Image 1 (spheres, one colour):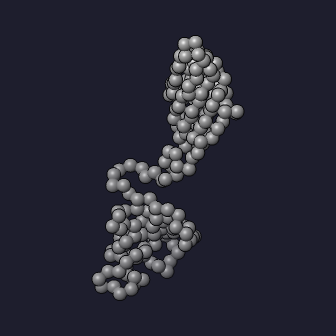
Image 2: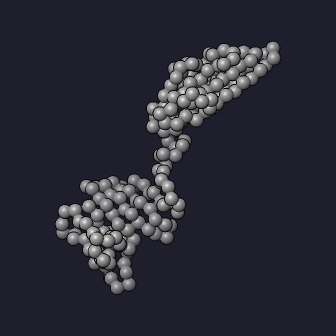
Image 3: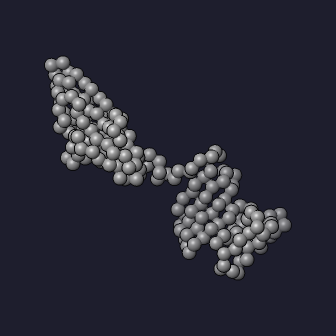
Length: 188
């Protein structure tokens, strides 16, 4: 159901509830679906509601956007950025709502894992200590992170870092040196 919501006054209307959009009018007394032959136009915004959940398509001095409400509680705003594409919600952004988790005791070198979080994650792995030591992270079979260190007569160890997309498989191996997991952390 589309409900026309007048968010302001015109020069000729004294009260907002008396304002009507130009063109096709919504029948405010019906609960039936209404179809319009042309665009529904309203100054300020148009609302779509189901029960207590509402989405307002609005335009103001800051540009076009969508306001989301649950009853009287504001849930968020998505603004049109002025270019074509898909709008990402803040929760979809990399690193937002994610934190580093120490998985050192539960992950093993040479084991293939799958990112089933539904979001992109980061993986940091440090393997073994040897005079020549590598840490290699593969994502879907492609080397995405690699560190090789050589300490001469000294044992050395460095870590590698990789970004893992949702549903991707990833693993860490030591192509040279010791495969003991010294550190395994993931931003998830």
